[in-house]
Length: 285
Ligand SMILES: N[C@@H](CCC[C@H](N)C(=O)O)C(=O)O
Image 1 (cartoon, rainbow, N blue to C red):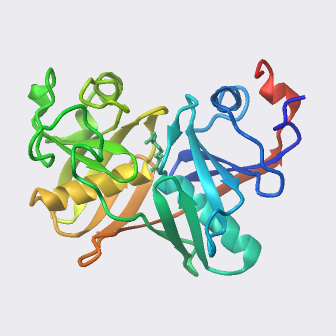
Image 2 (tube, helix red, strand yellow; image 1 turned 45 degrees about the vertical axis):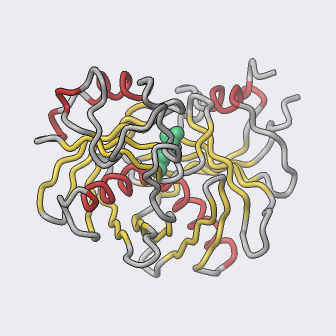
């Protein structure tokens, strides 16, 4: 019997970014990539990311979080998923403040009375070794990606995971699937990358479409919204407070002065809860 069978799950979404939550704190087991791929099948529990909660490793945190994409790959960060688990934890404990830890560091979350969740996503990282890139490209704020020069320069940044943001005249008219799939696997990105197409629609508003590493096109991506807002400010296109509009809705992003942390605020939705069945994990060794 697969050790994940009969475990409870919660299906949620953050602005349409499909999130599966597995709380394994009471009885931790590994969630291998094959299990994530099996569960993400369209006929099972299609999701973009699985947020897997393990017992805390640091005092004061509620859980250590592992994040798997639908293709079974790991990510150190997921903004929309973090809002979802913060809302669940706050509901369970009655405390509006929740601290999680992921491979990217601490995630300080606050659930507001109106249900919106704010997450401190930490500071963006711009060094080519941190994003990471396969070589030194000079200024990572504006990089022409070989073979894709027609898109203009991309702003490259890590929000705990790698992002490339292309500022284009009209993000609604970009071939997100075609360009995203090719750029995700570009040799410049040794760990692949999340690919975003952004347009400024006002000095403090960004329209964004995202092709996610390991998940494909999604209705929203929290870390991409942070990456786009930071990149817009870094390149002088916008200030440090931005509304990012994705197909799934709006995220409010503030790139704080001082500690340089990025604060992301947005909604979550609970869809349904259930129990994993052996059939859902069929063919997983
Ligand atoms: N949807 C997420 C990002 C999830 C991880 C990403 N696909 C990656 O592999 O880096 C978000 O809301 O941030």
